[in-house]
Length: 598
Ligand code: ZN
Image 1 (spheres, rainbow, N blue to C red):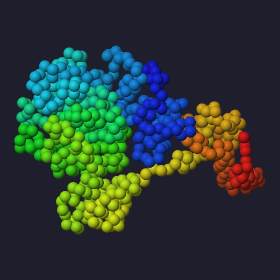
Image 2 (image 1 turned 180 degrees about the vertical axis):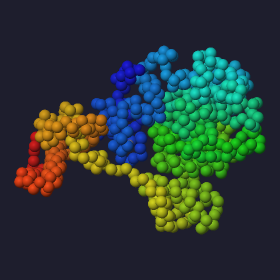
Image 3 (image 1 turned 30 degrees about the horizontal axis):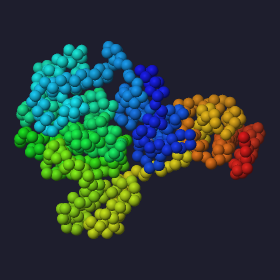
Image 4 (image 1 turned 135 degrees about the vertical axis):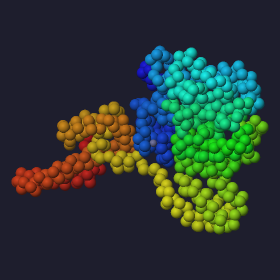
């Protein structure tokens, strides 16, 4: 394993890897970008090509190409390894199955299950013709590894047992359940859609019941339970295939279900992902689907949850800031939009909605006419414009309209980080409703105050260093940087000697050991600070004088505290000496421009 890591690091530069996800600009000896891991307007995310690491001054995210891919794509280490190995053209050697750990065995069981379902599909003509009827093409079936779970109680269980997996492992992988009468397959008589993580490993399944087995009792869709590998709140179906095109086209489309997702890809919208569709806890949207929607389950009201979480959208935001949320334009759909909008706007997305009207879902609509889907996506409107139009259609009397604007449109405006955007939408609302801009701004102020929207981060990097850290930290940063960087216009030996004089030999050693764990971030701090300093010598001289002053001050405090008690003549002399030293340093600091220590 470790040798593959080394090989990959040799072949891939951090600038290329990070640069394929983010737009990097030069910043001294480093590169910088807007941080993908927190919402910011000025770049505080730095990449060091020479060290092969990155560091963010805003959120302290740091690491190498592996942690970057893990964080960016929401993968674990093995997933990042798989992604980067493919990119570097390195084949990962499969370890001996016996020594593979538990997690790996779960991945393997799911992979084997997917193969089993694929084979079962090829043998089942009813399932195949169902997919044909729904308009799913052969190529799509292959590329999404769509399969079929036989309508038997233990078909998969028995197959996996032969493949060497234990029943406990199948349960842990979410494939088999323990019932009163023993074990049984979770998925039976269903069209099977594997759910992949962003590196393309199967982590779960979603199964749609075959119409012939629909009895009104079993859900139309059944998803794998949460397992060690599958967390619904952070899973976006199809991200493994969509991520490249989301980045290329610079927007993503979110649909509700697996079938919608696959049909949208088939229609050429390869930047589509889907959110999970079953009831869950956490930040989610409960959407009640009317009986007419849920196929033949007459009289049964199926409760469907459109799960839009901060985690999942945050993952998507790494690839593009622009998001189109496609939804069924019914009351429940509108509620889903509201909730998703609040999360998306909070994350800084440009959030548009595409309404699917006429009681159809995306999959049916695309089957009927792919051009209609393209038109719906093209007509997507910013959530504020959309909500405003929906309200205006209701033709409310003026005061009711005003209240509705305050409760269901202005909260979105309040979430916008850009003052220019807010201004734009205030004008739009004023124009459409006839409400005075002044009044709208007043109401907006109230909402923003109540919500205490976090101020955008615009603290400059240099300022952040000053504010957060003491002089000792900056001195340590300078020392690490000197050791790391041979091309400096400064005599490192002289400088080290000077710092040792100021701190004393033990103080010098203490300083280095105190910050040894922060070495990586200190290097970035030094670079950010000194690369940008107009006069490097002056900046260093200033640091040293301030450091010396700090130490004299500390000594003076100690001497005063002691001297008061003792009244000893030597102590009084020490206080006088230190006071003189302090005066001298203060004067020198004032005339720093003329000073040149090195
Ligand atoms: Zn950050």
